[in-house]
Length: 388
Ligand code: PMP
Image (cartoon, rainbow, N blue to C red; front, top):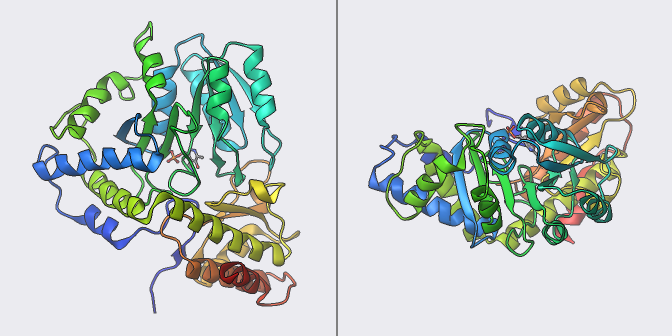
C-alpha cells in the first residue's frame, strides 16, 4: 500500500518525480557551467510561462511573500499612493506590506466570496493619482478569481502600474502578462509552478523597470533591492555567473526542470486542464450539497476550491476523517470563515484520478461525521464533467 496520503492542499502540492530528482541531485557550485546553463534556461522559460517576452524575470530565494516584497519595496517610495484590491487575506497582506514601505494605501475590499468590479477599480484610480494598484489573481483564502485581463489597460489609462499577486494562479490560470499589459506578475515555487517551497518568482515589465529607474531614493530593503539582483539575472541569462546572495542551487535546478515540463505541456493545454479538473471537482462538491465560498461559479478559481463544511460539523474532525481516507486537504484561512470552511488544492501535476480520489475521500469523511447524501453522487458528478 502506498504509504502516504495524496497532498491536495493549495500549496505545497505534489511534485513530479523529475523535479524532486533535480532537487535531490548533488549540489553544484553556483558558478558551475551546468548550473549557469540551468539558471539561464529557467529565466528564459519564466518569460514563456508568464507570456511576457519583453519582461525581466527575477528568481530569488524566499517564499511568495518575498515576491510581494520585491514588487512593493522596489516600486514604492515613502508617500506614494497605492491602491490595494482585496478579495481575501493576501490582498490584506499587500496593504500591510506596502504601508511598511511608506505607501499611503487605499483598500477596495470585497465582502468574503465576492470580487471588486473593474468599474470600481477604474473609478478609484480616477479619484487619486496612484503609483500602483495590486490585485490578487486568486486569493487562496477565499478561492475567488479576479479577472485581470483588463487591469493593465485600465491602470495605464490612469498612469498607474498594475501589480498582480499570482501566487495561486501562475502556471494554472490563464495569464498573459504582456498582452494584458501587467507590470509585475509574481508567484512562488510551491504552487502551480511545481517546485518545493523556497523560490520567489517575478516578471517585471519594461514600464515597471522604468518606474524603478526613476526612483529618487534607494530601496528600503537591502535583500529585495532590484539594483542588486538585476545584474545577477542578466548575467545568468547571458550564460555567465553573477553574485549577490548565493542562489538556491538545487531549487533553481528543479525550477528549470519544472518550467521545462510546463512549457512542453503548453500553456493553453495546461490552463484548459486546470479548468476542467476544477469544474469536475466543484461539480462534485455542489452535488454533495456543500456551499462554496465564491458567490458566483464563474469566479471560482481553477487552482483551488474553498468550501463550507455542512452546518454543525467540526472542520478539524472532518479533515481528520478525509486524511484517514488517504487525502490531505486544508482547513479554512480567512478569519471570517476559518472555522466553517476547508480548502482543496488542485493544481500543478494534478490529474483526473486525483480529483476523483479526493472526492471519494471527502465522501467517506462526510459520511463519518454524519452528513447525509447519496454515497457516490460527488464522484459521479465529477466523473460526468470529466467525460462529457
Ligand atoms: N499570495 C497568495 C495568493 C498566496 O496564496 C500566498 C501563500 N499561500 C502568498 C501570497 C504568500 O506566499 P508564501 O506563503 O509563499 O509566502
